[in-house]
Image 1 (cartoon, rainbow, N blue to C red):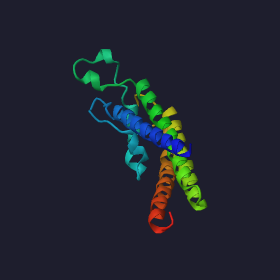
Image 2 (tube, rainbow, N blue to C red):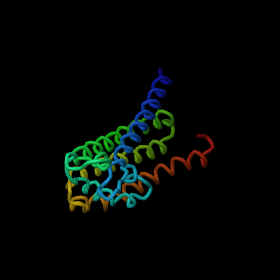
Image 3 (tube, rainbow, N blue to C red):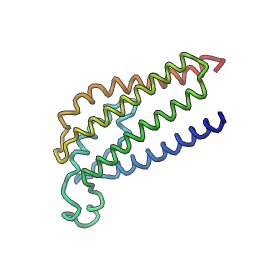
Image 4 (cartoon, rainbow, N blue to C red):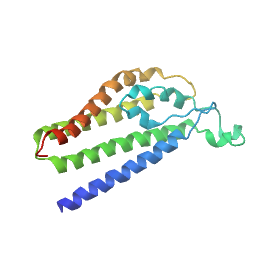
Length: 182
């Protein structure tokens, strides 16, 4: 039963990761009138400042309805409501993915207390990151073309939360090489 549950968690995490990649592809395929696009996964990179301008790009996608545009450009435009749904879906999938992969790590490494602490730290930072992104999404002002004023908190907190997450993951990886009994 234990192996079945571990295998199920692994398959679910992999399936969710593939789903996130597909939703991210859809997000990145939406281009502004100037042809610029942005990926949601860049907000969760080692340096989240790389994706900070994404919010202004996404708020600049309100260029008109699909009826106003003809030709191949029509397929590149996306309605703000659709982008908000895709972004919300991505952030929620990321939160669920974090729960699944940390549950899998805990099942595999439960016997070491300090590893449990690292995994808990990673989970809390992942969920905080997703919550901050969902709050920012709620404050996204369509059609302005500039960063919404309400995202200043996310832009300030993002590097801290993301750095904690990546340091936790790095410490977990290093522990596999540094501690011979793992």
